[in-house]
Length: 356
Image (cartoon, rainbow, N blue to C red):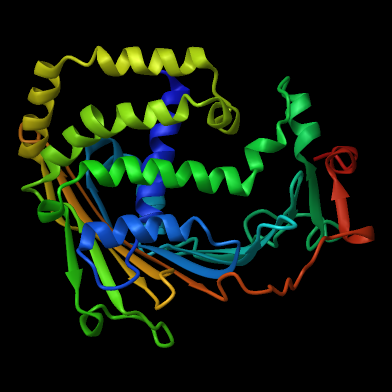
């Protein structure tokens, strides 16, 4: 399948995971989610903090059990935590964030990566990583990456529209509307009592809505995505303003549509039936809490699935949890780092001269 089409579909799924949202007044769950998805896209500034934890990771597969390196990697990833905190504003466009990585096991380590992004520049603070000793005069400085120059070196044309926050928001809103319109409220959505939602201290919400997938509806959920939602999403991506945003050509869209239209429904149905024999969903849901101003202020997701190959008894289990909290929505923001400059900045050319 075309790689750009697969990238687009992956982006859609990520948007679905991150942006499935709550309500304005207390409404029916699906209507509330649709309305708040649009409101989420109107956030012009905010503070945020996220975390993602791999709570369980098990693989009973020969290639893993026979490879000490793979076993060690599995141990490191189990209970690994990724955190992200930062500040965003649309005008002038500026993002400041810190990504934290906490690995477990024999090679346990913790380090942070600070980043600043503007319309055409990305600054990445060189971290101090124990297993990757870097020159002292480089650690702590910001590596400046000119996105336009980077695109030119790759033989591509840099289009600032690809980083247009307003256009990205508009595209995401249309995609979310297309997705949500295809999923049945009774099968995939429900309301969760605020008191039962385990919201963090300080999060004030008037409604919490849950999107969920179970063993009973997973087959239909995938069928809906492929045969009903995906064609609509491709039509949205085909709009000229969005093709530029996504770096796609009309030929890319046409190829993706052709591949989608040529899906053998008999084989697809057989694959979905087979999937139900080896896939067990213990838990998959996304809860979103919305405040009095209709903004999604908190989301958490939990996924616990098991895959077992009936003929070989090989299996895999993965359990993950994640959450995102927004605050100071559409308020003036304070940037701690600002735009790095002077001796605190190293360009790619200077890095190359240093032998890296």
